[in-house]
Amino acid sequence: MVTTSLAPNSADDPLAYRPVALVDLLDRVLATGVVISGDITLAIADVDLVRISLRALVASVGALAPPELRDAAPEGAVWPSGAPT
Image (cartoon, rainbow, N blue to C red; front, side, top):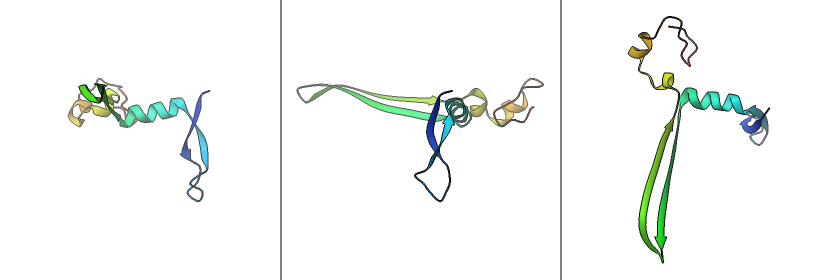
């Protein structure tokens, strides 16, 4: 199992970390969503020739669906909140 150390173990010791499974981290990111952004600049001799701004939104469809579309989901569909429609 792949683990990372991202979640603090206790509020008393902020430097103490407990292992978090990568699958749990990915599930949380997809349920809430995350924005990834960056800039790339191509320059020659300190002259900026090309600048590219990159932005990506990573989330599950259920996390981004408005409530009126969640109500129109097929019978038995389960959204990230865990409540079936």
